[in-house]
Image (cartoon, rainbow, N blue to C red; front, side, top):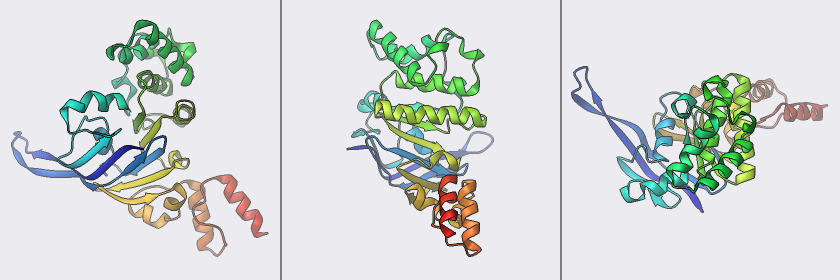
Length: 283
């Protein structure tokens, strides 16, 4: 079953001058078609301004298409009567957890979403406990979110979304403000959730290392999808990725340079272990 699907999606916004007068329109998303199956891990890559975050906001009906269609769990996001169902189906985790955490105690914050959904009190606390365990934050349930690290705050934000039991979690650059340790924490949490809860995960990012385990990768540039394929297929096209101002995992870049110097290495090497094995086989 399709969890998220777009058909010729277009999104335009008004451009204004310093006095606030409309002086034209700009197209942030241009004829985008994507297809995400239930249970998949999909990554959407792109440089700043590529349109990837604008696309993410359509998945939770924060924005609706100017033209074309976005379906989430079979529901048209442009239909106002489906807004509640769309937002129950797809939960959003944003770049800055401080914009998403509103409680003064961790467990209260995680319980806020289910409470708004009208979930009975006993079930709320069950969900809070399960969600905090799932993200590895149960021992912090009585702490103030203000005293947590960036990575811990982001895990609490993810727990708050998980407690609402969405079928799909959309993470819009969730590690952009984190240090490498925090980034690893969050990614490990997302993978664990996927295994435990069988949720569909859509990760918006510009960090190449975060997408090597994805089922499919879409690359965006100037509002268009310009590349689509498995991580191995995408990272086999190093020069093309560079043309879209995107980095490449260090090990992939090294393998590509060695290949250009005559070593017979396979395309799209994603991990250090793969490169070591390929080099050993040359001997």
